[in-house]
Amino acid sequence: MSVRRLALVQPDSFAFKPETLKDARRWMANYPAGKQQSAVIPILWLVQKQEGWVCEPAIRAVAELLGMPVIRVLEVATFYTMFMLEPVGTHALVQVCGTTPCMLRGSGELMKVCKSRIGPHDHRSADGKFYWQEVECLGACANAPMAAINDYYYEDLTAESFGALLDEFAAGRTPAPGSAIGRQGSAPEGGPLTLTDATLYDGSLAQPMTVPNLPSKEPA
Image 1 (cartoon, rainbow, N blue to C red):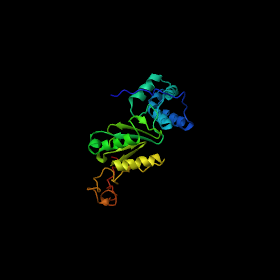
Image 2: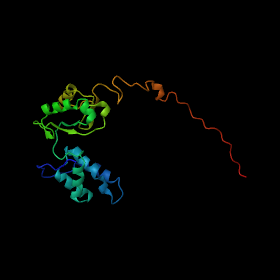
Image 3: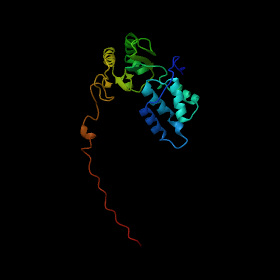
Image 4: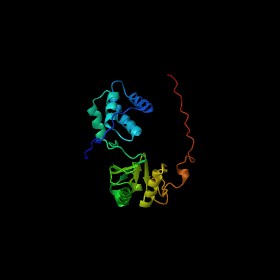
């Protein structure tokens, strides 16, 4: 297990934006009275969506909102790797999968692109636009190699297509997620090999269901 610590440099304060606080209270309302602390994970996620990362003043603000000890919120934020504990890129948080299927399909080449374009892993780029890290399995093994960029998956990548993606993000655009080779879901390259007849699953062959007439029971 990796050791995760808060960033050495922290902002002086944190404040929920009105829309973030509204969403946080909506999450709290999902739980019975006295159980609002169960909303700590989604509220930390809302904080991260607002700020890009989870800072120490935000941890204190979440603890105050939920009425729980600060150390409890700190434990959650440092345990789950979904929470970034230092500032990330303004344009893209790039997470390259390095687990075996992606490694065998060329994730090392993607990481070389990150090192040359962004810099060392777990650090922001010089212009502050990018931050990249190597992560473990993201569950898209059939479409390896792949990377999660911000909220979406980009799959079937090569060094060239990955570099083009980074160019798009650097320009402030958000490329369409999914397979770089146009793969349908996790189907084989070139297209599906089974269930190719749409009538098998589009409902056109469905027959109306008939209910047999059952004899009524007369009272004895």
